[in-house]
Length: 362
Ligand SMILES: Nc1ncnc2c1ncn2[C@@H]1O[C@H](COP(=O)(O)OP(=O)(O)O)[C@@H](O)[C@H]1O
Ligand SMILES: [Mg+2]
Image (cartoon, rainbow, N blue to C red; front, side, top):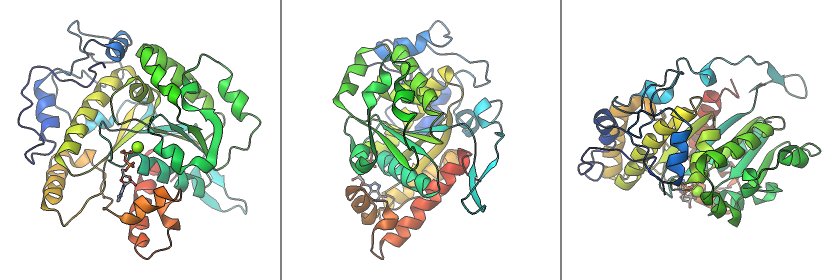
């Protein structure tokens, strides 16, 4: 696999494993050049962006700046300035059936990827709940399950469209209209994972990303929101998702290994933003947080102290009802247990926040 995520010339020995949390993101990014090394995916990313001759992707015309040599800051990741994706969109409010305001904004489809290079963090939890909540709000939501594990496809099985995720990398210009033009696209529409995703790794990243991006663009004629669930490792599939998305968010547990995964993810996002300057980082979502575990509390404090702007201003606790809901293919608010109430509140704070950041609701 390529090394889009790798940093050069620094000692990685002191990070994350000793409760220093994400200290490494800032200090390492400050001292090092985030390398785009050799490898299938890496070489394709390099060919798609300006490089400085050392294999590092350099600054773009969008004011994103070079990946190398600068400290990671909220502004650099969030890219709120000079970025077309963050400019206020011109859109009119959609009205509900009886003329009431729905709070939903009519605009071009927005695409969000849930990504972190670590399993078990809550990517699929967030993807599925955003889909359920989006549909509840009257949005037309399409979910592309790019994770070979297919957990989102399991939970959202009832909404399968018949289109499979690997087809989103086919050279077939009419694929999307031929599937969705004569179909009722209200609610959730699932583009199911499939074994063919393994073949995408044989493509050059640039080719894979171009194909996915073309089909995602075509989806915008039929949907309001596109959610992409990604695998827990860097691959053509994950990188293509980030190169096709407007937004990315990263659920993360307050555990050392998870924070290491987050560190790698931030490096990948920075590198890929050179090729997709429109990509905005919505933030890290602290998930499965347990206040009774001192390690969690300490890591959360470090995260919030050091990276306030990169962390969503709330958390989702470890809640059995969330796991139960996903296993039962329903959102947590449909779990009929008192214990599900707190989980519902937390999940809805997250969905509200993310949809507002995406400017699909007010
Ligand atoms: N806040 C939470 N509380 C309890 N269980 C959770 C929570 N978030 C996710 N889970 C469960 O943890 C596991 C991993 O979550 P998942 O969303 O599948 O992670 P990922 O997609 O990042 O691998 C799943 O079994 C899921 O149901
Ligand atoms: Mg998953």
